Length: 419
Image 1 (cartoon, rainbow, N blue to C red):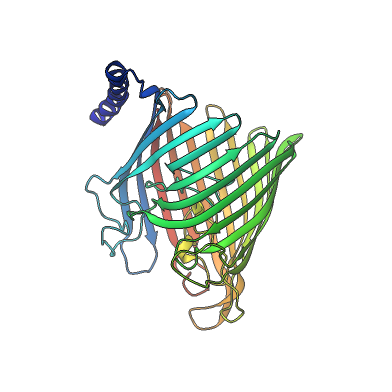
Image 2: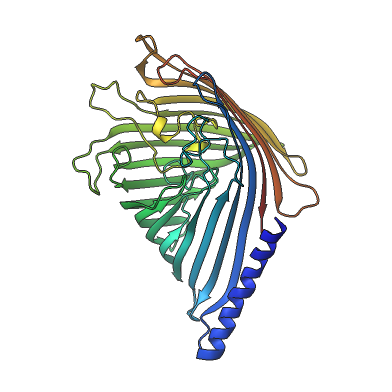
């Protein structure tokens, strides 16, 4: 670990040397105002799916992420960024990373892998920012477009975008996504997608967000148009209150990439109310992703490029490819406490139902998709600047619907150092 830290510390010196050398030889300051940031995140994770014929997966991995940015060619407001992330399991492979062929173990999707996480040019003029290249993109609450930062191999997007904030309280974004990579040891996936996003803050108690995500990836289930509206805000009424009311629909894709005449017909809504009363955290949430009975011409709502780990339970039973065909209704409550020095503790309880009845293991029908209890504690490590520790637990209790009849337990212990 010491060698790793020392090698990272040498990077800004090398980059700075390149800048000075270029300036001396050519009279052009190629790089200036060099900034370096990084992260080292070691983690132990265990995952055990009951009665599935596989051994529990146990993984010790560490993510290293280094990003260097600098002004370019002396042009005001022109910035170049390069970044690399790598995940190492140190030869400990008693888990199915989905890339190591260890299918006799339960899945922990953190393979040994390295990838270019950032490689971009950014230019700002007045209140308009323009970007081209690879970067990590999170939009809104990350439900539909996100990096899945919880996984060790975080997703990056290849985009061309323009963002503008010239009008007071209004932010606009238009992006073209031509590829993405991450969350597993996969090569870059091509894309022909357009993202449109607008947010207007009426007042602290009301922010209106509208979006249209036109995805074309050449994979059915991802190709669709998702457009919707979200109302969010914060209110001080003795307690600090926050809320979210959101509705979205998924329709046939406007953009295309390979596949033709794909169909989508699904809807989504999310209602959330949270409170902070002198550090006591409480909240209720109800989220619905519509489904199909297989004969109604509908499709299952699929937030395929979202940070799905944040939603529908940390055990990831309903993660992307395992979304129930009958859709999902997630009613959940949360309770916790947060204070300086103490850190944050939070517990969440989920009750899962299918939006449309599904077949049981005995060929009956049911909407029972099980329940889940989640808990997390996170705090700064005393005496170590920028170092946080985390302990996290998820226990999914099975339902009656076919495909969801196995309990699952997942646990994590993690350190996170950022510089």
